[in-house]
Image 1 (cartoon, rainbow, N blue to C red):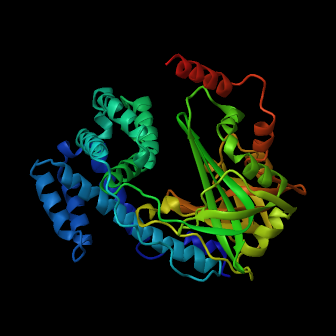
Image 2: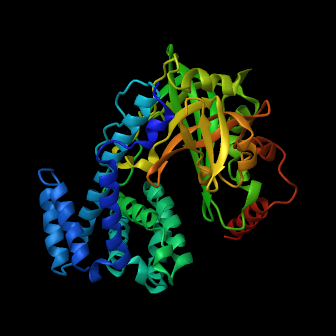
Length: 460
């Protein structure tokens, strides 16, 4: 294995691509109805980059129209596709860099999409409404955005939230909408999280063209050892992804289990776990570090298991030892990595599992950092750790081992801890979840809301 420091040396062309994306994003601050010569030069540069690609002609048409103040939805869907393509190229390059560093064999990282599934006609109307709303945002620009551009989208959003075919779009749009509403009007454009907001805009726009549809699963039986949990949430949604190793048919595969639930902002703190009663067995197995015996569980080609509520609990295992055996740099044990759908190829989706030890921690410019024995330096992505996690900066600063995910954000690599050894004890996100589910508080916001909802349904 080469030094961790090689992660600080970005592959050739990476920085140029990041810079071009940043220049394109400036158009979204100003608004495409207000572009100046510098913005037009950015569009021309973008066009040169895509010369000879399948997107070149449609991008040329879009650039010509926008520079001539002709604004139609299809031109903005092209811009979204182009920006997504740049991010996809970065994803491939950076993943190759990480796997080479870790001594892992490079193989397929993406899967082919299913044939597009016909979205119901009423849902197609809502997707058209989404595209129109996103175009309005792009025309006005984030610096000039006000509530009048946003509030009329509420009814469409409610319809999308109720449509099972559009659950992923609903989750994305709900978070994006409320994030914008909570920030506008914006007094200082320098405070705009522009990269994030254009990312969300791009993903939302691409999602209207090809709504995400689950691949066809196969059923599989085997043993599952959970190694960590990534918890994410905002005021209206909570989601977690459990990472583990599935042993089946004499091979080991990295798998994920993702569960999500809508919430209201009054459901906060540890009560979020009460939204996942169907995951009690799963979370208890993680807490106790016990093997789960799965029988005919659906497994997607991406390596995503579809949780079925029940599983048989088996023997105990050592979480950190298991992580070290498979995910240490140049580890001898082989596993099949998870894959990703083409529409999700974006640097923010990079999540390469890694086990690290033989390091010391330090804080530089308020950034907690791992100083590895080989001289390598790797920041800890503390901003990715939920405030509800049992892991925190103080604990991590005293850690001797970390199992986590290599992440790429803001032009740099960092490690997001999922579990850590601290003074001989293993600490990980979700450690208290099963206890909360098995012995919920006598009074909770979740129980109160469920009772009120039940009363309303009975009255109907």
